[in-house]
Image (tube, rainbow, N blue to C red; front, top):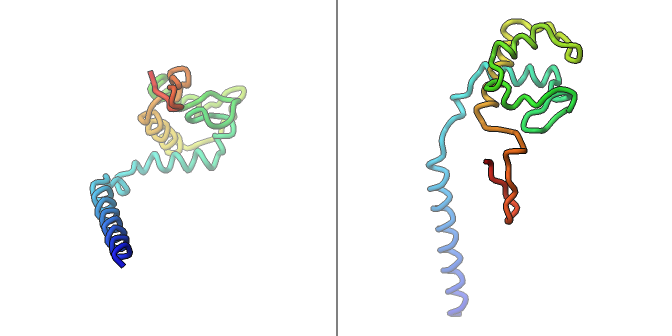
Length: 134
């Protein structure tokens, strides 16, 4: 009987600790659901509708016909991006995007650019299997 009571008390203490700990963790999480960049969100939709990922990459994921666009905004700038979107190239067709759609795609690429670098040459694989960016 004593062993059973001990197990029930231990189980109860663990359950209470779990819920208190979970409450503390989730109470302090940032609330960014309503602070999204709507223009960038529209750019993501346009990116998906035109299947840009079939040719281009983001974070080294996607097609290989076009370049990785993760850090294009900081490397080339918005005017460079809009020039390609407006006229296309020999390989990339002109999608006949409106000015709003070009602005939205540029905003989307700007948001992606803020999130970090995708160049795998800047990563080092550590002994424990994780990576560290130089």
